[in-house]
Amino acid sequence: MKFNHVGIPTTAKFPGEIDLPHLKMTVSDHANNPFGIQWQRYWADAPYPDLVKNVPHVAFEVENLKEALMGENVIIQTNSPSPGVHVAFIEVQGAPVELMEIDRSIARNL
Image 1 (cartoon, rainbow, N blue to C red):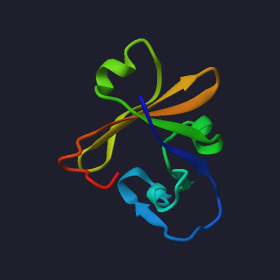
Image 2: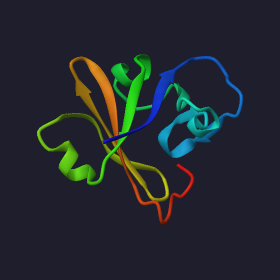
Image 3: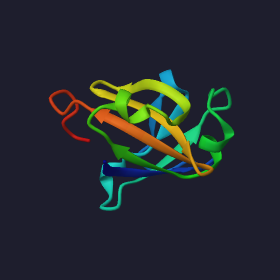
């Protein structure tokens, strides 16, 4: 696994907002700072567990998402926030963790 970003939920607006209507959330670009901090605001009708909407998470890139999810407590099923990127969330000791499989031939700037 390779660290990608840390996601911090907020209810406030933040600079550089990126709306993701298909996911019912707004995010910041984690690549715009050297520490991979991504702010996340979930819309009122976002269908995610409160754990993900309220607790910061760490995100790791994996080679094979399907294999990485085997035996884990999946709390958000695999989805695609952008072309070439597939993600899912698991719960580890009460904390949300995002696992990401990235096709760098499609998603070059992540």
